[in-house]
Amino acid sequence: NAGVMQNPRHLVRRRGQEARLRCSPMKGHSHVYWYRQLPEEGLKFMVYLQKENIIDESGMPKERFSAEFPKEGPSILRIQQVVRGDSAAYFCASSPIRDQETQYFGPGTRLLVL
Amino acid sequence: QKEVEQNSGPLSVPEGAIASLNCTYSDRVSQSFFWYRQYSGKSPELIMSIYSNGDKEDGRFTAQLNKASQYVSLLIRDSQPSDSATYLCAVKEYTNAGKSTFGDGTTLTVKP
Image (tube, rainbow over the protein chains, first blue to last red):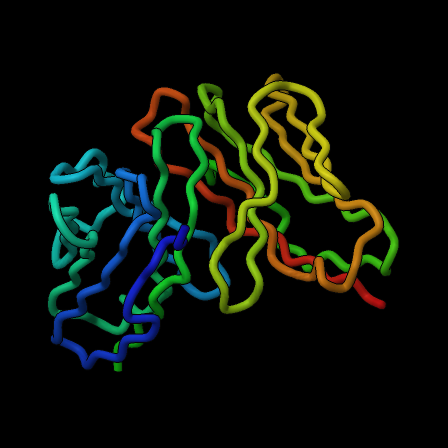
């Protein structure tokens, strides 16, 4: 059973470009979470999605960031017009049931904005 | 005040000693508590989860939860150099949509 998959693992963008990060949850998992980790800091929650629904986006910046989890295919975190402050590791986690269920993390995407 | 607080460290212990990692949280409705280990440049890896007051043991790891004091800890017995990593405490609300709130982590170094 493959774990959570994320791609690309490393992404370099210039200021003003768009970044698209993909996450495929573990088989049988229908809940996806996105977290951002700045250097030397903990993980900060961004968004929680189920298939075709955004459940909690309280951690998402109001501008430039969006996320989706379509009926078919991976979850996508999209960052428009990237700025240097967007440079971070972005982790995706998945779980089969919410609340007390454990979240399994993917390997992350390291975004570097030049 | 941060919702989940950890001593940033670094915490250094000799090989074979007990490492004690502490975490406090501010939200009284929190119901689920997790300890993750994160090696440099890697993703978080779940070590322990605990939901009830008291101790929970798994091999060399023991998680301790005290909801009245809003305190959760992780003890690592017989510490090994391979335990050197950053340990993240995470808290979830039972009734919340499922997000975890993480502390900034404590960096542990186990010296041979």
